[in-house]
Amino acid sequence: MPRARIIALGAAVFLAVHMSQAVAETPAQLLDFADLDGWPEDDHAAALDVFRVTCGDMRGADWEGLCALAATAPDARTFFELFFRPVLIGGDHVALFTGYFEPELEGSRVRTARYRYPVYRVPPELAEGQQWLSRAEIETTGVLEGRGLEIAWVDDAVELFFLQIQGSGRIRLRDGTVIRVGYGARNGHEYRSVGHEMVRRGIYEPHQVSARVIANWVRRNPAEGRELLHHNPSYIFFREVDISDPSLGPLGAMNRSITPHRTIAVDPLHTPLGAPVWIEKDGAIPIRRLMVAQDTGGAIRGAQRADIFFGFGDEAGDAAGEIRDPGRMVVLLPIERAHQAVPDA
Image (tube, rainbow, N blue to C red; front, top):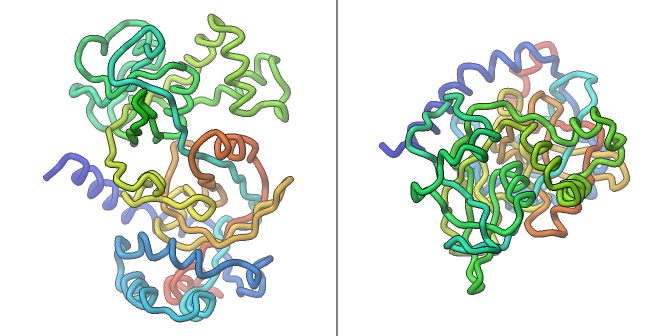
């Protein structure tokens, strides 16, 4: 059995065992669709299209039955209102929404004077779950050099850092062709926020920090900037992914392409992967929209925590980098499952 499949099965077993415990220990409230701000105005058909992408991979007789119904549902809003119930998991805890995107970097298959920063595939000695060398050790000791582990070389160390933060991306080669890289493995160290560290050091105030601000500061201060990036010991290794249709989004945690403005990354210990989730994001640009939990992220923890996928390229990156907003997220669960989550309702 392929290694990726073994890992996926192991993750599925882990989630099956621990998810019910996590949900049971987290307060939940059964809501009505009338309680969802903006529900009538959404494009439910667009949400149903995204739900169909991954519903076939969900396990459980209720999910499988709903997936079969979704294939021929004549009216999307009616489908969701008839067969699901909104469940607010996490009580009155205010949600935190951030954004992510698929970066596009300039690169080369061979090292040149311009393209000198390597995008590495997984080294064979790295075992899943093992804590290996830190980012600083990987980048300063040369432990991976000369071993043929480079997928490509890119021209910007800061963009490579953010590629690792996002976990997937596109690399546009000098001949105009594009390769896509996806998450392969990590070095086992916990993610530490460079933005938070800049605030701690007094470089910026919290409201000033964004991905673009961080990138510009690191480029202006190369020596200090490199040391700042090493504050995050987590390091991501990649795999090359087929890009037969460049219009499709990258593969999410369910190994299916994700959709801009309709896919979110969640904590699967609280939100089932593949479930529809109603988003009420406040802030400068409010969002009221039905999305689908099709991805995960190392920094996404808790019942009221989600990362919104904005697409790929610089424009999507700018939009995603501005998002750090409050609100709430409400999971749509099959009726019986919803009542099991809120037994006193």
